[in-house]
Image (cartoon, rainbow, N blue to C red; front, side):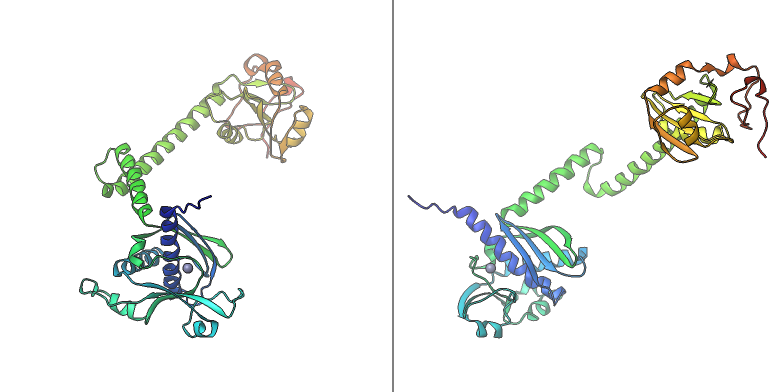
Length: 356
Ligand SMILES: [Zn+2]
């Protein structure tokens, strides 16, 4: 049997793992008390959980990314050295104090280096000087790339809070960085095409415009729906029976919820049954009876409160079909504006009496 080592994936994991060391030491600059909580490494992929009381802002993320790419460009040596634990402590190696270490430990150091002339701008020299001799010192038994240049490239793709006081950063290294750029660029291209614009810089304005148009359109639809519902609810042959002053069936193309809301406003003080062909219904309380009581009398299955109950019940269609049209059963025209209450059981006594 021959042991086959997949060199390409092994190197990809080494890149991601060595980048984890760099990320850890960069985070320690922002959160001096931070501690590694968990670390996961895969092919040019890393996930690093660390203790922090807040998430990084976008400038800090951009800055960490830039610093790590500087370190990759600077081609810093990565060395490993076995030493005794006390010597390692003197080097300020980041240790996990919960872990048990033997007398001998392995220290992984990433050496600081001379800043070349092309990077002698901004605060770069000062920042790198603040690390001293090593950009990172950690106790670790894993395998690493020999030089930071072998990481190729580094990008943070995600940041999240995973538990109280624990944040997580997900990042990519090596060729996966350019894969990610292509993926994002592709999404951007598709979006630009769909929005009929030329460049990504126009995207923000275009999205704002589309959102505004959409909002106006929604408003228009809403107004039209309300107008239409109001119209239907008044004209749509209103029915009546011994229990309900008003029975209306909402056409399927109109919004049921809005129809109920408008009915509450239109038919105040009346016992109203609003239904649709899907057996959905709502009952509005009258001047005399609560919606609950009316629903009980109508033998409908319902939920709700004194003012309004709702439900879904097959028998609501039966109630609607058996009810008579208002026009044919009443000679008096209902005055919707005043929405009066009248005796439900005695049709002859249906003279309007306004509630005071
Ligand atoms: Zn390591």
